[in-house]
Image (cartoon, rainbow over all chains, first blue to last red; front, side, top):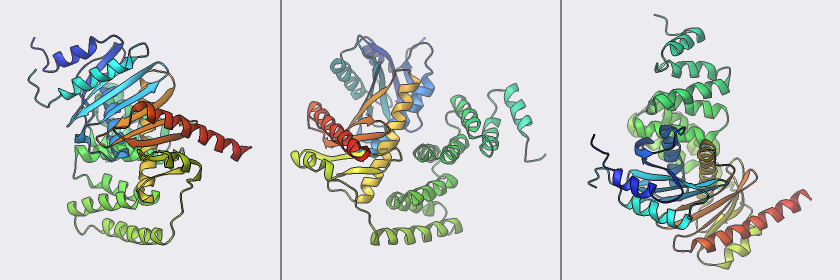
Length: 120
Length: 265
């Protein structure tokens, strides 16, 4: 079976220690474009929530969605990082034990490679 | 065939076919009587049909009834992204913005609606309300309290704002330098909404308590943390190191806590 065009990008992020899941999300409608999530997590619901949060954060910072934001949520047992590029965003669920600096870098780098019609 | 279907009929259809679109009508029917059930039905349906325009509109109405206004506005924003010519969602958003005193956003939404359906009588009514309300707001502008954060704001030229946003999204203390009061109000409402969205994501993933949020755009870095139901927010330039923004946030939280102590003590 032919892999998704985002396979390479997702795999690179998933290889980081402490990354529990990664999704590529379409920001306009909150649909999952591609991703890897753990069993028990509904990727569609998570993508919709992430896209909604991203749009809201964009409004708070007066930034256009296409401009590209980086969001980080910190919680007791982990972090969520979302990096946007044009109409897509890459969302990562990060374990509390992960190195946040490395995770940020990895998510940002991967998001920089997001395109609507990827070639990688 | 009758247009009005009973709870039983709608429920039976949904039970027989969980993919049925009857969930929208069922949620609308529940909205009249039992909001929590309406919410559950609509959210469940949207998990199966995440791009169903009328379901998002219905969910917005449910949130509005629950007085969760930012969530309502978000749902209607989704409707407009999915179906830009959806007039009811634009009308609902304009009315809500007017109630919140967010006249700039009301005006933008109203103009978009007027382009869609010029001459619509409902739009004319909203236009009258907007002009009257915005006119009054220009005459009476309540100053936002800001003294407690004044030193922090004056401490560095890279700090653009320090604010305490209450559970309703109102700016209770502080200010956003260089922005109008309406922009501050809108910022407060959006930050409140962003916090709620963040809490939803954290809760969905069972990550425990929500500790804070950072948003970085090309120009700004917004760092926020919860203080009970309120949210403390620091806005800096995007080139300001994260550590400095976090330190400013901690100072703002200390000030806000001390201020709360004085008010209650």
